[in-house]
Image (cartoon, rainbow, N blue to C red):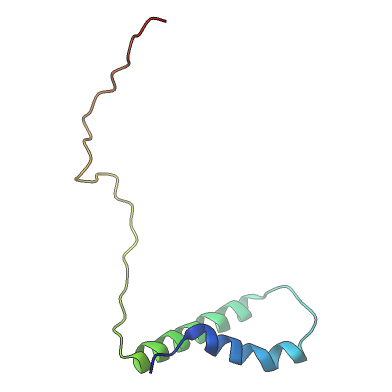
Length: 80
């Protein structure tokens, strides 16, 4: 059985949204709590779905091997 994370979030949100009707600014503590809940949710989903966690390294790669870096731009000198 595959767990859909959006369904889990909706189920969690339903009882909370009926209690807290007013919006307030998001605090740093709330952001930290969100990070903890998000990690817990994803870890649980990967566990129940039998998936391995894949982490992606983010970096800037300016020298892409498939591109020609020493190319020269030639302008077409057509007379109209």
